[in-house]
Length: 225
Length: 234
Image (tube, rainbow over all chains, first blue to last red):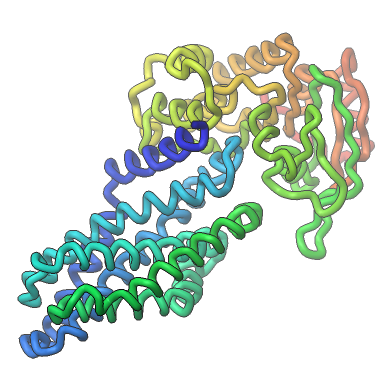
């Protein structure tokens, strides 16, 4: 029970802080909106011809905007000097990691819902018939990149060039998750059957489990450093 | 215990033994290793060699159990600026598994004189008020051992007086207090033992109960140099 109470307390604290400042959500949503607008201007209406490309644009918006949120996850704790206070509590590093992951995951999900809405308007993409499979892909893809991103956010929080370091660490490792997410989203947006995305979903589930396992095994050492 | 940062040795062969209820003042010039020692004792930093054991708990191995019995008041307040005083204490109370947390918060706010500000966000607090709330945060779980790293930073005269009373209260309750400070007179007034650190070495560790301030100033000057004698701040 202690684990659950501590988990809830960290998530609640992050949500109250975010609700009062709206720093993370606003910057993430604004960033994703700008990405969609820029690609819309660049490709114009011809984009409607290639669903694979618009799936890529959607995930570029998700991942790049998500990265701004990931960066803030531990940076804010470090900047406010509260990370040591958190570490001083009788709490397992895994609880801190999980709470931070859930927080970032939920903030990113809010941004993604907003992005899908803007995306469907700007790119004339009908997402309503594919909402369940698309939701599943977005869930698994987001879990993957936020899990590994939370670890790298904690690693880079102590570095001077932390934003650059986070990007350098994050993108190469998260490539399998991004590729699987883009490919499966393209299949769904092309109106093909749900069975066709199974191989990609298996890759997503596998990488999600690997990233969570790696996080579980390494986070205590990262926090100590 | 030794602590190194790369090639730099911050603490060298530090060996301290305290009984329950002892209070230790740590003195030394800037960079002597006082804050590092407190961070290692709180298991915020791992020692490079040697070990730290508090109440039978080994720092590093029994991290969670150790953190349950210690409280730290440092330069940084560890408070969340966008949460209210009550919410900050509620958060830390929950993290420490404090029973009847609402009653305890009321008690602690009363103790630090912030009962009237419970619903104000911390970002609107003055530095002194934040430091008072930080004291409340550190004792919300009624710790056995209290670490104080320059605890008077940002406190006004009344705040300092109240805090001195609080430290004496902790001592009367049998809590172990370890305090790093530049204020020699306060250190020897509040603690029964004193240690002087110089370049990461403990050069003096003695009982100071009953020792006069002037006498201790001479000891300090002998150990770290006359020119290193800290200015007395009221």
